[in-house]
Image 1 (tube, helix red, strand yellow):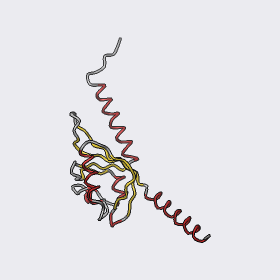
Image 2 (cartoon, rainbow, N blue to C red):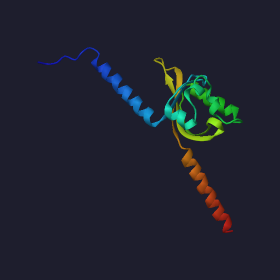
Image 3 (tube, rainbow, N blue to C red):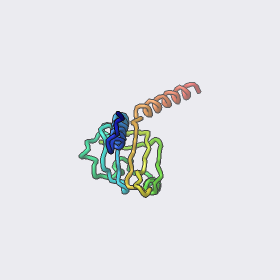
Image 4 (tube, helix red, strand yellow):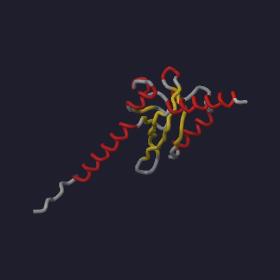
Length: 151
């Protein structure tokens, strides 16, 4: 006797698979979601740990809280304009953690599109690369010192 799949079985499996994929991303990546105006909607534990905050300290605040004072305002505005236009942005970013601590991230800011292809929010996936950046700066400093001492 052949079994007839239950109605919705494939949809249930797809939802379970989607949830498993999201869980895998959340285990390894720092993830934060923004409204199109930069308001923080959610942040996972990896993001909060990297930046040194609790969720209650960031939810409802603006992305600007992570940007250095004195950053180029035109460049920052263009960054958000591109995201609102549906274009992603990826790179290494210097950010400011709790207490003014320097935090470097490798990240991609990804607009989330609705069924009509219009951006509805932005999700960022990031990795904290601060330790690697600091080690590279230390190595550069040592090499510069050696080079100067040989002159």
